[in-house]
Length: 513
Image (tube, rainbow, N blue to C red; front, side):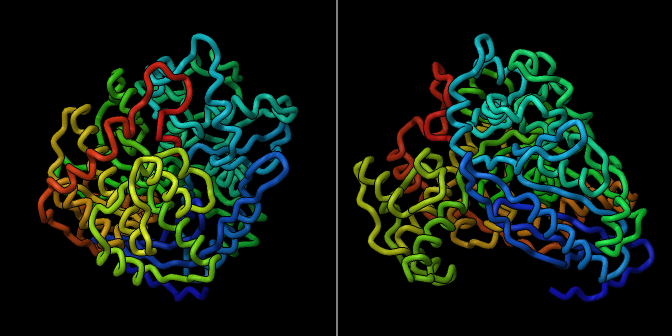
């Protein structure tokens, strides 16, 4: 894709965000200055996992090449002041003593993770893990992936663990580090201190030396290696700046909140719904409700739950496409709006919806299992999915507010889901709170603004958010209708949605995302 030249005025600079999601990656440039925040997409590329005989893997070499191609395209538009990298969480690569990657990184949807999450060492069960890390118990958490990986012959040659964005930064700069917001998703970070937990690492039989020193958003991560600079055409001294490398952390940083008490939903493949707090909530009630305490920018805590998000809809569309029914999103949403309300509802986090496959058939099976009638049209499936997501948003945010002692006055819904008017309106209707939708590119904005802040162009987190609110297209959805219909629909899901069986050492019932 050709990129037009980006002109900058005094006091402005251009930053490049490498933003990798579960299905695609892109490089986006952002021009930032006083009252200015403009994004341009330089390059977009697919993120296609590969299934090998030993499991599902990320094609990280293709991702790295796509990133380099994107940086070359970004450089053609003009000087780039800095580069930042964010990706999804939990997945990692292992390096040997020479710094070589030991195989393609495993995918968090690989089946090995669920098996490993059932075999925790004695004395280190789910309660003990939560008391230290405060992390939502999910079978793909890094800690469980490592327990599975430890049983392989490859493990004996591993010397360094790098989470996905840290691995890509290492290839750009040669430096080694672990960015804190992403490190907090491993299950091995102390939620109170913000440091690696030697107690948990030791109890799980892991080597402390595997885990690099921590970096904070805004820290310098190095400069481009000569061969990288040569390929991309960027100057050899181009800095790479540490950003909130967990994509959700960057998205939350860009939430355009101007009020103190707000809730957020970062909605894409997943819906991450929660609150921003000053300290973690590590109570037994919080663990039973399966809330996570992940680090945010400036020492904040992202207190949230993972909810299966637009994955459900996109998997349905893939099935229909393969069946020769290529249905456009606009038409599907129009059909959904005309379909019968609350004809069928699902728990989006039911374990049967986790893996890739025939999502309409899985929805049918869930509905029949729960005494409901499956939809007869694609629009009916879409309505079922979106109403169910709105209910999950409502229940999750209400429970978060109860556990944290907060009273949010507004929901900020950011990410790709903010473009879905039905989901935004139904989330407002279900919750009884106004929903402010946008920006859709919250992750890239957060990435770019944290670089700009490190370079002195943006002030504190509140100022960063005010800039987003002033410059980005946002839409407000006011609650409407009778919420008693939402109450009745929620009652059909039963009381256990999103809760953990407190006696279990496996993943939480219905929340294996």
